[in-house]
Image 1 (tube, one colour):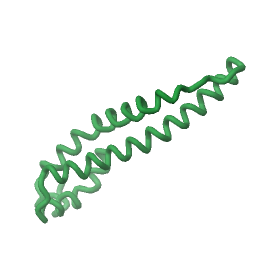
Image 2 (tube, one colour; image 1 turned 90 degrees about the horizontal axis):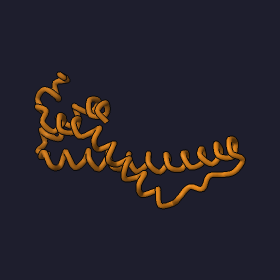
Image 3 (cartoon, one colour; image 1 turned 180 degrees about the vertical axis):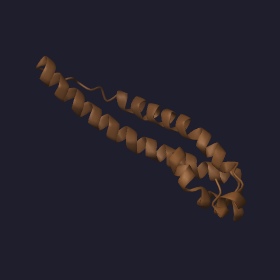
Image 4 (cartoon, one colour; image 1 turned 120 degrees about the vertical axis):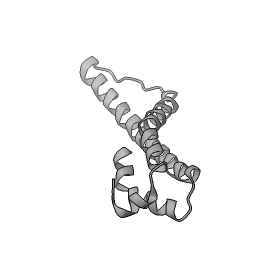
Length: 106
């Protein structure tokens, strides 16, 4: 997410120059982070479940039962980790100077 914020600094500068506030900019990037976390959590849960079953069959000779109760836990962890990783980048982007961003300065 930090890389995405760095690549989109001109976009952030333009939104700030057009009057976007701190809250609206933060909301845009937090929602984007949560959506990415949910997509990653769904694919991670599905791939992890398949991998656990295959490894269980290969090593133990029987499949491993994956509990569906773990799905919300995985999604919650994905959202938490993604938010923790992107919070500093979001804060830095919101506090950036739009003039420097529009000029292409770091």
